[in-house]
Length: 343
Image (cartoon, rainbow, N blue to C red; front, side, top):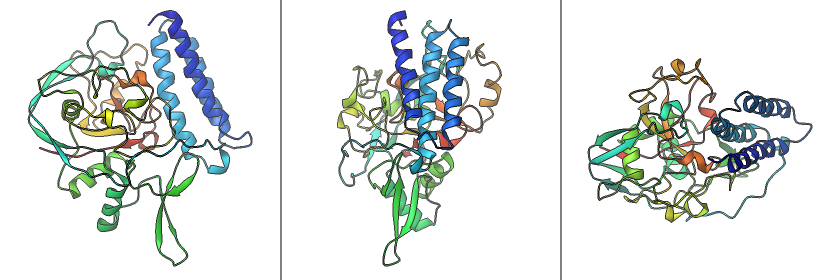
């Protein structure tokens, strides 16, 4: 990236981090910890002036994590932001999509472009034929599981009794609590997603299956984004800070991949069942020499896609997210959705 556009992008990323701080009331006890994190990002940038691309992406990743911190705060600690109009049908009709066997390209080539260590090392994997759900699993579907199997409610759900003593489910959004939107993606831990998949008699996709469904084409080629070659924009999904909360899983019909899978990017990261491991040729990064060994202990699973608070720059095909003990802080710091596969 040229120096002038890069400086502009860094300034915008810093503005986004300060925006989160501005939404926390001055008297809130949580403001101090968020201020400390924003200050640490400034210090990181000052230490790594020779690598502005890394500074930009590091800050953008933490802008998303700041959104999770904001979400976790009590409502009276925040300055509410009006929500844009809701999108999508009351409850979408789910179906499974057939994805023929083919190749999936994972990872990024070592061509001098900035990437993170966990995505370096482009490789191709053969993927046998399988089926994948058209949409992410929605709150309404997961509610049936909670009711039938007695599973615990996900982290943003609340149960309240109405005037007749009957339970009603609500959703704790970033700024307000409202009746559970049945058509929004459900955000869960990997363990919760895996248990739901088993209850349905299916599985979470592997990283290679997810790539094949998202970027593959019937002619054997691959797209840089699920919808094609166009750069990410507002017509293609819920990402890049346009919204704070989710939307319906069937919103943004132009987001569909060549095989028909909707919202493979945006509106919630998606769990895979693939443990986070380096690709062939991996070398530990000089910038974070102390953390790679802890990342590859087998306890973490690869997440793909992106959330409403994921920057467009991080939507590249090779980007891999993960969570667990370590820099992400755990599953509570990721808006993690999922979809199902057969095969």
